[in-house]
Length: 428
Image (cartoon, rainbow, N blue to C red; front, side):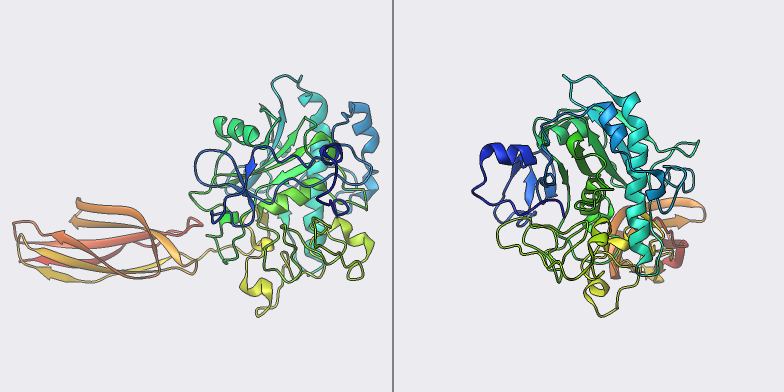
């Protein structure tokens, strides 16, 4: 619950102090972002619910010192998962697969505080992870954030320069630094005092790896930006972690048709990291979950996060952020696609329709088709993304009679690769 409802009549100074600065965002009627804002950058549409306000008593324009950050850290005892250290867990080599990349950024006209801030970012990232661990435990599951880590099992924190005056400028500068990988979420601690926090999000309800919030190919790495006035508020029971809030937006919360959704990308059923009075018409119901749940995700576990949702419930039929491939412990696809090719017979120099079938539990796969003479490649098509189904491709046979093989291989969005399926192709 980030703040009380901000009414349309709020003064310009009040909106600025809350960080409700919309420069760099636009509404596009009938556009791909629907009722969400679109970041005003070139290329495919990048969507967001807009900036979130600062909690009561916080003016985002007030710059804090390193000493103030140090004083704001909670006692280590508050870390239910790691009582003696503020490290995020490591998985694999720390780089492979979908990951959340921590980023420290400062504007070109502001000195870097990277060295001083890094220890705090490690703690704040650990608090984000604990948010997910404790929330998953409520439904009997386990989830960790898959942060990028170093070979020494430390949080990897990039040090970059990016403009902070408007949101579109931040995105443009991150793009110029190639922070665009579809298998990355970029959690940016911006050393500036313009906004509280903002996170990209797509109102995409479809299940599976192709959900736009799940890092499919063609979707630029989604960004969450938190300015320093709102860094590290996990221990504030009136608030919860801003970093966790914005990261959860990038994982796909809260869908507009969720049972307790607001009109503005959040929820209204009480104490919850993603719930607050976010605009006119939003009325919070604070009798659903206790105040202590303010640090955790999804009061009721029926809107956007559950490790064990009912199959016929909303999260059984709509996108569930607990299944995000950016979370360790999520149920991921490990089954390879199934491909089949059909035998064919054709006269020399004539066209033939070569038939094949593709099936994967994700509903889609990238297919490469080939024709071989023994081990020699004669023809290749693809790679091309196709949905499950039966297909055919037209090919002109060579002028000489011979026995060939028509083959197909497919890879699904999780990288699972099928066997190479071949069928005889006889040219007479």
